[in-house]
Length: 157
Image 1 (cartoon, rainbow, N blue to C red):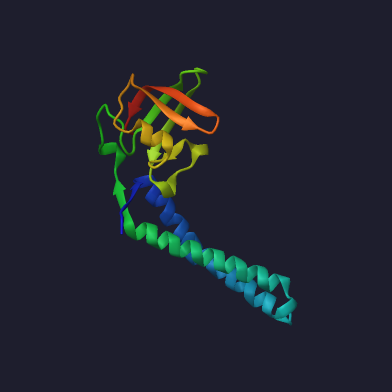
Image 2: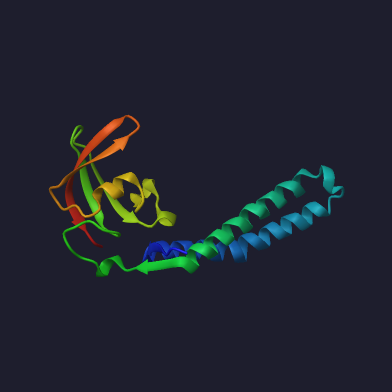
């Protein structure tokens, strides 16, 4: 099995989710199933079926989290440095057409969240940036056509 790179914050976030799902959510779902079961005929009990479905989703996510945590390779980004872009870098780029600046941190797949400015190491933008330096330009194929960017800064924080 292949290791899953994670930042310290990403590992903590996934571990917290695992704890939440195993200790709190699991108990809440079991109580909901017991309560729905007490209402009688299970074949026509929508509450029971909804709770069982929720239990299946929760247990599936728990298994997924167990696998990710077991395979995780935690990387302390604060100990990284250099001028070239690699995992953990916080990169500010500018769209060469619109002059719009954006800042992203390159993180592991399980912790990526575009709304928080964290993009996956396997995303097209990350792959295009890896090994580049400040001042370099790169191109990314997008559904609306190819986009060109310039790297403005690289930090490891």
